[in-house]
Length: 289
Ligand code: RM4
Ligand code: NI
Image (cartoon, rainbow, N blue to C red; front, side, top):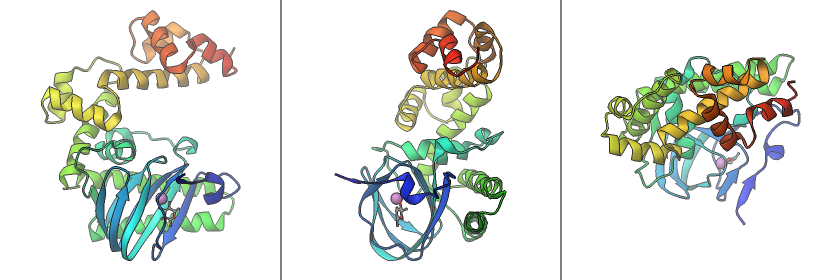
């Protein structure tokens, strides 16, 4: 059976969902998956990075995200040095604010971790020296907070992590690799969908933002996200609806309209399909009368 790195072995017992593991150098490590996600910043040396679907050479400046269940390993290590930032995506308490309008954010943090190959996937985000120095400095700050664990560390560490994510998302936009570009174009389309979540966006619009034909847009979108643009929009809207149902006392019909549906029966059907129960029951179950 393949090895899965466990949350309780790699995170502090206080449950804080971010942890930094420096590897200077990275030693040989058997193939493994994780119960958490892993943001990897390569600071020196080189190696072959092997995942279940593909393998590529790593050198200083390479940055990638491995989604938990995806297996990976490092081979042919030559003084490889890296910083692992381990995090539990669902436990993070950080407001993304306008970050989803940055295409690179989707490319690196939502698309890349689940990128289902058959697409070529050589070197995606690669930082130049200045960019690398900047992100290493932020990672140092994050690590200092996590080590000291003084009162307020959770806030400070989250802020440092947010800076890292924001900075890398911006860097991704300057990423010249063809693969990075493909993810980035889908990222642009997703940012557009997010900004216009309340209205109908048509395929023509999306394909033109991604600079692809409608057919290849659908194909690449599906392979990057595992779903169609329409299903993606509906899932986002239902997600927002869940939030409103839990945190406001807006009526179900109002919530439906708030998140961009114009038919509350259709909304309820879609809600049930995704959440497994009706909006009303969802609200009750979450303790809102
Ligand atoms: C290992 C290696 C793995 C990482 C663990 C936390 O040395 O870098 O990829 O998952 O550390
Ligand atoms: Ni790993």
